[in-house]
Picture 1 (cartoon, rainbow, N blue to C red):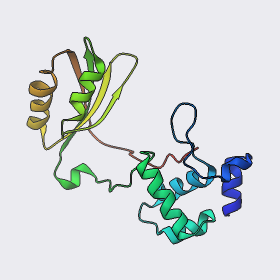
Picture 2 (picture 1 turned 45 degrees about the vertical axis):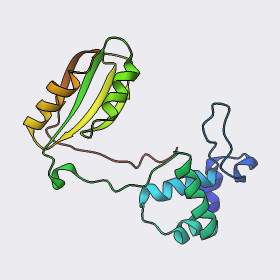
Picture 3 (picture 1 turned 180 degrees about the vertical axis):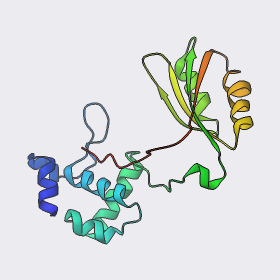
Picture 4 (picture 1 turned 90 degrees about the horizontal axis):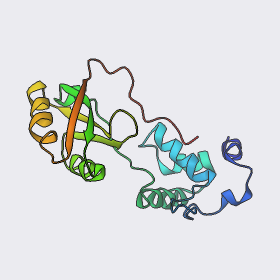
Length: 175
């Protein structure tokens, strides 16, 4: 299984080298083994290093080192994902934001707001999309009206309130 998994990643023999090299763009180069480790953790973030090692053909210690390097490089995070509804947050929304001036400055301000879970700068109808998780509609109204719209440079917002979440996954793999 391990050899098929790793072999399917790349025929390049250099892929068996350590995963910490960086590409010309400055992003970490991930070899086939590191990609396989990431996929193992995406399936189960609590999977023991020994089990991962068996699946990818490394020792437990080698997996532990690789995982730590991936965490240190910012390639991945290992977190517990909750369902907001089960922990007291009754309202979620995606907010499209149009900006005058420095988009990055507004994006930075949004990332500092505890209710904002996701911020992406986009091309298209909006300059920024921000996902917001709030306790209720009043809380959402407060965040949008008094905090987001009050940021200097925010020209307009459009809210997309979530009625029902059908799919949320972090299992896209490493392709």
